[in-house]
Amino acid sequence: MSSWLNPSTAQAWILLTIAGVLETGWAVGMKYTDGFKHPVATAFVVAVALASFWLLALAMRALPVGTAYAVWVGIGAAGAALLGIALFGEPASFARLACVALIVAGVIGLKLVHD
Image 1 (cartoon, helix red, strand yellow):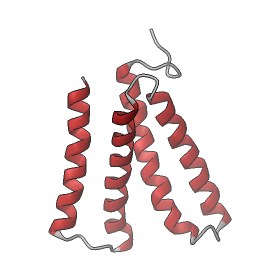
Image 2: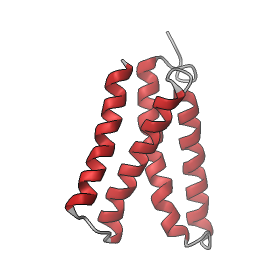
Image 3: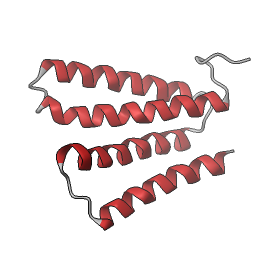
């Protein structure tokens, strides 16, 4: 039986998913720091980024670095793009959403070929 600090492959995928969601959080949170002018928003971004990096590092104990990093970035990029549309009124063109769908497809593909 493995612990979450030394995860099994299944646990690593859970940790990696959480790390990716947290990456979305700190990436979007950067917008609220206004160039690190707001201390509370900055502290939030730093704390969430550290948590995201830590979970990514734990996941990499059981997953290949290339797969883990690509999935982490993919979740963060897709999440940030979608939240940019929802929160900041960024364009939601067909082409942009299709590109986000390609990122999601790539993340799913990496998960499928890993197992």
